[in-house]
Every structure is written in C-alpha cells, then in structure tokens.
Image (cartoon, rainbow, N blue to C red):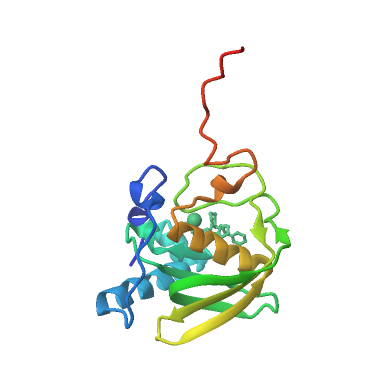
Length: 183
Ligand SMILES: O=CN(O)C[C@@H](CC1CCCC1)C(=O)N1NCCC[C@H]1C(=O)Nc1ccccn1
Ligand code: NI
C-alpha cells in the first residue's frame, strides 16, 4: 500500500517535471500503480486506517507525488450533487473552462508540502475534463465547485505546477532581478 513514505516532498525534482502521457491501453504496471493511488485516498479517508498507518487524508493524488512521472491521477471526493467521485484517470485534460474563477476558502494544501502556505489559489469555477478511466473507458466530466478545484490541483501536478505558484504575487515567471541602476 502507498504510505506517506512513498510521497515525495517539495524540492524533489519530479514535482517540477511535465509528466509523460500514458500510451493506452495501460500496462499492468501502470494499472497497478493507479489502483494503489485510488486505494491511498480510500485508506486516508478512513479514520482508523489513516490513524493506523499515519496517512494524511487526501481527496486527490497525482502520480508525480509518488515519483512516477506519468499523467495519472486519482480523485476521491463528492461533486456538487454530493455524489461520490472515486476515479483513477489516465491523461486527464481540461478541454474547456469558465472565464469565472473561484478559490478554496482558507487556501490549499498539498501532501507534498509540509508547511502552511497562505493565500487564495485562483481556479476556474467550471471545467470540462476528458480522460480515460482505470477501466479503459474514455469519459467527459463537467465539474464545478470543490471537485473542479481538486481536478485542477491534480492536473497542475502533471505539469510541474504547485498550488502556491498560483498565489498572487508568487508569479514564477517573474524572476527577481537586481534593481536597475538609477539613470
Ligand atoms: O495533489 C494532491 N494532494 O496534494 C492532496 C490534496 C489535494 C487537495 C488540496 C486542495 C484541493 C485538492 C489534499 O487532499 N489535501 N491537501 C493537504 C491537506 C489535506 C488534504 C485536503 O485538502 N483535504 C480536504 C480539503 C478540503 C475539504 C476536504 N478535504
Ligand atoms: Ni498536491
């Protein structure tokens, strides 16, 4: 089973790589890994099991977080109709999204980040995601609310993006340059 020992933390280079597409049908090895990722979420959301194995509860997990640089994510949360979403997905892709943005009250955390990082993380309010399920079916998901935020957090991991990169004022593209000589 996956435990916290298998989850790499910020500073590990794999978290900053673009993960590779999974060529489908997935290999048995890839299926096994994705199944274990879903199981991590189930175990981590069961109080007794989480306590027993010291698991931090998670509603999502991306393969790079267990040092597997492949485009695979697991999600276990509820949608806006309170229906359970429990999925292992290959090659998830946001195919369209709202202009409107939203954010998680109180900010976001990450199993790969052992510290609190304050600040709102802007996310699209609604997204349409296409992916292939663990079972091999191509699906299209229309998500909003918390589920939409979870999927965006996970898909960011596949592109080497950490949630705090998106907090205002943390623009990763603006390298701090030495002050210009005053003319
Ligand atoms: O990439 C995947 N990860 O890093 C696991 C993260 C993914 C979520 C962070 C924000 C959106 C997706 C995760 O699940 N957590 N982050 C660390 C704290 C525990 C947990 C969490 O936020 N739980 C939660 C939050 C709100 C309501 C219910 N539960
Ligand atoms: Ni994360």
